[in-house]
Every structure is written in structure tokens, then in C-alpha cells.
Amino acid sequence: MPVPSSAFHRALFLLTQLADYTTLGLGGPAKTFVTAASEAELSAAVSAADAAGEPVLLLGGGSNLVIADDGFDGTVIHVVTRGLRFTDAGGPLTDVTAAAGEPWDDVVARCVDAGLAGLECLSGIPGSVGATPIQNVGAYGQEVAEVITRVRVIDRRTGTTLDIPNGSCRFSYRNSLFKSGEPGRYVVTDVTFRLRAEELSRPVRYAELAAELGVETGERAPVAKIRSGVLAVRGRKGMVLDPGDPDTRSAGSFFTNPVLSREQLAHVEAAADGPVPRFDAGPGLVKVPAAWLIEHAGFAKGHGAPGPARVSSKHTLALANAGGATTADLLALAREIVAGVRDAFGVTLTPEPTLIGVTL
Ligand SMILES: Cc1cc2nc3c(=O)[nH]c(=O)nc-3n(C[C@H](O)[C@H](O)[C@H](O)COP(=O)(O)OP(=O)(O)OC[C@H]3O[C@@H](n4cnc5c(N)ncnc54)[C@H](O)[C@@H]3O)c2cc1C
View 1: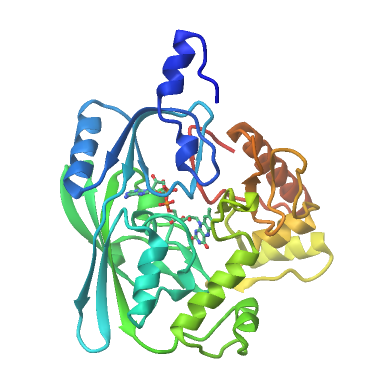
View 2 (view 1 turned 60 degrees about the vertical axis):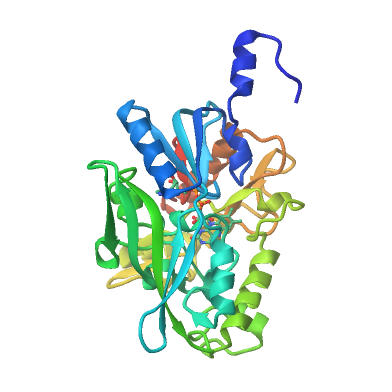
């Protein structure tokens, strides 16, 4: 990129571009960018920004962030802390404590290699450990909420470090205390997962994964085989980061699967003129695949091409920066999809990534 000629634009150019730190490759400059490689550095960076009254953005792998083209007018703290500890928790149980900046999939791989079950279905999810409790990451029937025992945090309100036990994290589908309860209050420093030494994973719930593994839905398979099966299925959907594949220049699923009442489902089925796939989501509630709604509202894979922001050619739920897109382009595409699904089915889709400086 050529260096701009005006002093003002040169100053902006020298600021850290957040596009370099997000998997979408989007996001303007950070006013201040700090890297925290230890818990002490993380704590100091947060205290300094808070004392100066600066807005703070915690950044892990940038795989669940949509940041404005104008960037972030505050301090971005890139969390790259390291540390992984295995502690015997009695019998077949092991507590695995990982620092916030540990790359998530490396931790999953280490646990699977150690013969521990509980994280294998979460293989291939990009990003760092510290973000996993934020939206209670999940895939193929597993969620981190099922195995997290505690989340260690800095409470920015009091400046103290404390352990938040699982029961206080208010985990729900792609949500938690940290995401929508009290967003921004807590800085995750490490997370403890309680895993079980077991050869076989839990019964496989997803037909596509079962087919990949050559088992029936409901059958069990070895933990290591589940990991390789999940990676294979995810790879075909562009859900494993691959620098050579523009479909993976995304934030993963852009929308959550809407949870509907039975009455809302009846309305959607009337609009669809037929049955709609659904999963049980608690008493009187069903979860409907957002991908199904998007496809049946007329948005096919690749929608938006040859524009720079488009629906992934492999997965309807991922919106990708095919090259040269801006955040404004991506949001225009997202708004078009939200409006289309609302018109077709009366359901308003909710974005899954955290939006910084922008709204849908
Ligand atoms: C190809 C692809 C596939 C994906 N597949 C899945 C999937 O199957 N399931 C799923 O659930 N998600 C998925 N995601 C979304 C994403 O990978 C996860 O949400 C992941 O946990 C985000 O981690 P990160 O480190 O990149 O977080 P970031 O994007 O850096 O941050 C996400 C949020 O967490 C906050 N945060 C980050 N670190 C901390 C910290 N230490 N303390 C407090 N807050 C913090 C940020 O401020 C932000 O609000 C996918 C994304 C991509 C690109």
C-alpha cells in the first residue's frame, strides 16, 4: 500500500490497522494498540486505559469481531498470554487451565492427545481461549459451558482479580454474562475446563459428522476420530481458517439460529408452506437454523458475488470478505439478508459476532 502524501493521512496510516488482526480482514485504525503477553501486562494495560478514561477493546484472534472502517477510538489490548496446566481432579477427571491468549485449537489438540474428552467437537474453531466463554462457543453438540468450571477475570469495576464459577457465568446459547450480561466489565485471564479421560466421545448428534465418521447418529466414536472428523467437515464448509481460501475470510456464522415460540414457528411454516427444520430449545421453544431461513428467503451460497462482500460459497451462514471489501460493504450485505428473511418469514436475525463502532 503506498504511503499517503498528507501529514494527517500519514499519521492515520502509521496507526495499527485492525484489519490486520481480524479474520474478516476488516477494521480501521486503533488509536492505541497494546500487546499483553503476561497477566501483569494485561492488568497494567487495562488499569492504565481505565485510569485515562479510554474505551477498551479486548482482542484475541479477532475471529468474532466486526470493526468499523473508522477503527476504534480507544485502547485495543491484544491478549497473547500463554500457559497451559493439567491438574488431576480425582478419578478420570483432569482440570485443564489455559491462559486467555492460548490459541484455542492448540489447546483442544493437546487435550485430545492426552486422551481427554469434552472439547473434541470444538476442534477447528479459530481464536483464543479467553474469548471462548464470551459467547459460550459451541459446535456439533458441544459447548464450552458444559466443561468450564471457572473463569478467572479482572473486574474492571473494582480492579480486583476473581474466579467466576460456571454457575455465575449465565451461559446460554452463544451468550453469557460476559457478552450481554455485563459486557466489557470482565477481562478474562484464564479458563479452567474439567475433562474426563475417556476413549469414546459422547454420542454423535449430527448426521453430517456421523456420515463422515462412518457411524450411525447416536453412536459413539473415539475422541481423536471425532476431532479429525470435525476438522474435515468444517474444512469443507470453509469453517477452518485457510489463508488460501477467501471463503474463510469471515467471522464464522454471521447470525445466530433464532429461538422461536411454537406460535412463531407456526407462522414461519405457514410462510414456508411446509415443515421447517427445528431443534428443541427448552419448554415451548424451538431453534430454527438461520442458514435454512436465509436460503429459503432467496439468498444462495455466493450471493453478492462478484461484489467484494458475499455469502460464502460453502456455507450460507458465513459472510466473507472476498477481497477488497470494507466493513460498510459487509454490513450492507448483512442488512440485505436480515431484511429478506424478515420479509419472507417475519423473523429478525441477530448477528453473532461482536460489532464494534457499527450497528446492523
Ligand atoms: C471460520 C470461523 C469459524 C468459526 N466457527 C465457530 C463455531 O463453530 N462456534 C463458535 O461458537 N464460534 C465460531 N467462530 C467464532 C469465533 O471463532 C469464536 O467466537 C472465538 O471464540 C472468538 O475468539 P477470538 O479470540 O478470535 O475472539 P475475538 O474475535 O478477538 O473477540 C471476540 C469477543 O471476545 C472479547 N474478548 C476476547 N478476548 C477476551 C478476554 N481475554 N477477556 C474478555 N473479553 C475478551 C472481545 O472483546 C470480543 O467482544 C468461528 C469464526 C470463524 C472465523
